[in-house]
Image (cartoon, rainbow, N blue to C red; front, side, top):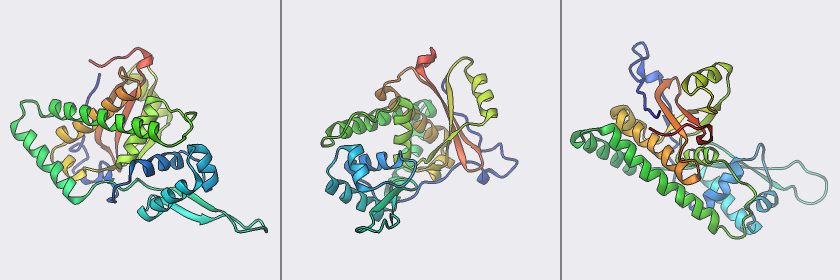
Length: 265
């Protein structure tokens, strides 16, 4: 089963307390810089240019240029490593926040398009999901192509379809966080008994204003995006469920692996 649930109004009169924060408004990053950021964000701690070059297969000068752009964009920090007593200390880099996406013009266009669907569609939610499917497929294909085209990168750092999709959501500004509580494990088993269900908090939303005004459409687009990305990344049978504005500070995304035997309706 795949659903979008709108919980905006179930907040004891304080709907503003539920749901994610707006995405960080930042300038676009090129595919090559995004590729480097994905590797940087996957590290548990700060890393050097040489270490990141080894991970990506890129030349150190290329990595340095991309890291400088990330620092300038506010998507990474740069600090000096402790001095070892010999030579200059190395620079250490760490990914922070969400990459810079979107603009006021883009956000305005999203609201206009959502309003148009709301006025003209017989089933706005279904049309939103359909639009998101195409968007997710296109974005996932672009990610896969950019990775394939990256010069001399090593293919060893493989991700599951869910991990690829979450990385894409992070790139788009959703800032996903994994949920691993015992209570969530019980809830997940109730949603899909026997399936491997994972839950994530989407703590930011790049289209928050439009989502508040047209939740069925915009949140449907986001669910379709997830489904389309999972399809291209290799798990077309994965089951997904989105609970918009379900808790303070986040929406909730639930994913179950297609390998569990679950399928889309």
